Length: 188
Image 1 (cartoon, rainbow, N blue to C red):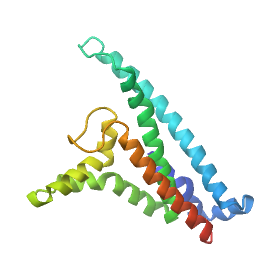
Image 2: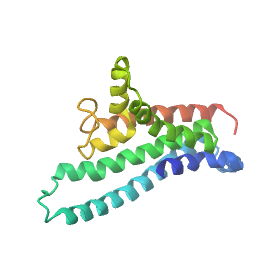
Image 3: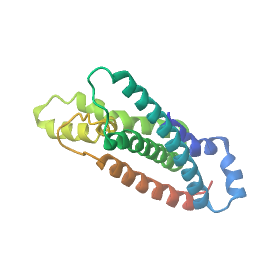
Image 4: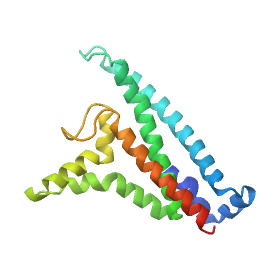
């Protein structure tokens, strides 16, 4: 949902032609991209943070009498703030991809493919010679990186702790820089 919304934040304006109106109102293209990115990131972060906190509180109350221990402060931080930052950054990455591709359906398809394809491909790698590739695809797939925040990884090696957040931050920064460069260079 956040991925689709991120793409549509920029790409839908190209489809409708409203990008010309936006750029006429604010000729500084970089400022437009930055403003969209900031507003989108903050909204996605806050909504995800509130949702993750409510779900976490509900989950803890359900497990309270079943012998499950209370989560530590670090677990709460990773399960709420960490996940919220990760999802907001995925949405921001989608916004940048939408600005780069400038086609809603293509950008959504690309982002969903980036989200799901590595894990699905890894599941069907049966050859012994591809075990290293399979392991890397498992380790760096987005669903696995999300599960690391909840201490449930698909592999014993690879990113751990806050590493998935730094990875998606780096990829998002590169995509945002590319979106900025292309926005300054291309015609609207």
